[in-house]
Length: 85
Image 1 (cartoon, rainbow, N blue to C red):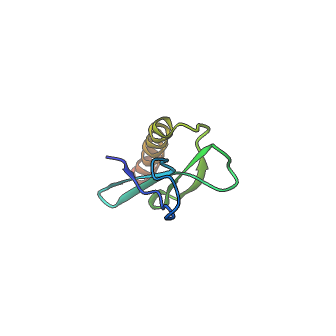
Image 2 (image 1 turned 90 degrees about the vertical axis):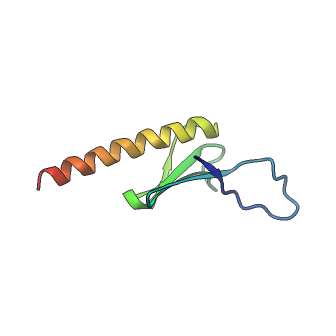
Image 3 (image 1 turned 45 degrees about the horizontal axis):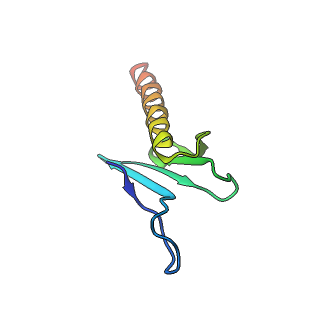
């Protein structure tokens, strides 16, 4: 399940979710607003070599869905490469 991991200052409105993370079996996926990308959300999954990948959407739920599709595609490529050894 995605978890709100937004860091808030004391004076900030804590209802705005800017960062969410999903941790499963050592795999960590983060979807976040990032300086320089405006309202567009980006994703990180350092386990699979993904860093600041723009997702082309500003809606958090849609960004999470897109991030999962990207992770699945990357995992399939890695699995295929391993099977070729």
